[in-house]
Image 1: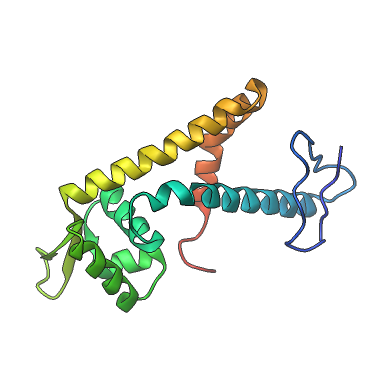
Image 2 (image 1 turned 90 degrees about the vertical axis):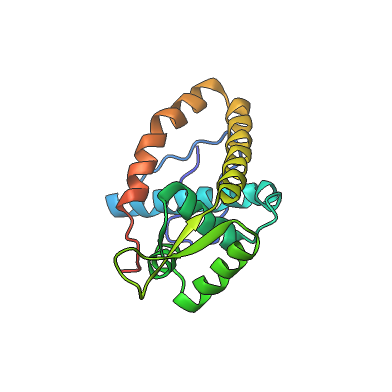
Length: 175
């Protein structure tokens, strides 16, 4: 078994496949959390990187696909709200939405409570594109899960709700 390279920087390599990392060998509680955070960060980056190829099938840039996902799964919202959710400036979001509208994937409508605000929503074509993109991602993940040893797969099944809870605890804006 190997120990995490706590404090060795953010470029440490992950252990080889099949090697279990013991986080509790000779490290303090804070060091354990930092090591787990590094592993979770690395896993998230590698999962997203692995999905880029199937995301490219949609024909949208990552920024447009992400914004469309927010609109499809979260519902219509103001341009400013969408910019905040995506962590970009309003002018950047305006350009992203312009592209979505230009492709017939989103619409702009006047906000019912404020004539000064615009609501952005997905069109049926946008919903269809996003649903197919999500299904491609799910299929990719399912195929990878099927390749895992059944015992390890069960651990991921049990951990998935906790990972979702952890994601919900992260601040939406930098602290």
